[in-house]
Length: 128
Image (spheres, rainbow, N blue to C red):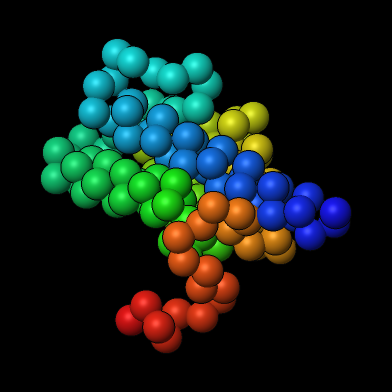
């Protein structure tokens, strides 16, 4: 019972983070469609830098949906979106960011949860 609960918590956190990073991608691709309070107005002014950030966050959202190295990918995505908001946005500590940081902490403890494609844990040597 407890293991099933941890697996479900990992899955829920993984999907929440995929939605959070996907909202950032949607806001970058079409600034008029802000998804609730999930995304922020953080644009660098450089089209190449914004495109790179959008591509990277989109890849992170896809990997989180599939469950590939969820812990490492989630931490990387949170660092990127936090840095983007801190450098170019207006506020970092939004309710959505706090929920995403909490989801990363839970995901770091529980793992990717059920329905993941690859269970890698904290090992990176197989990925490089």
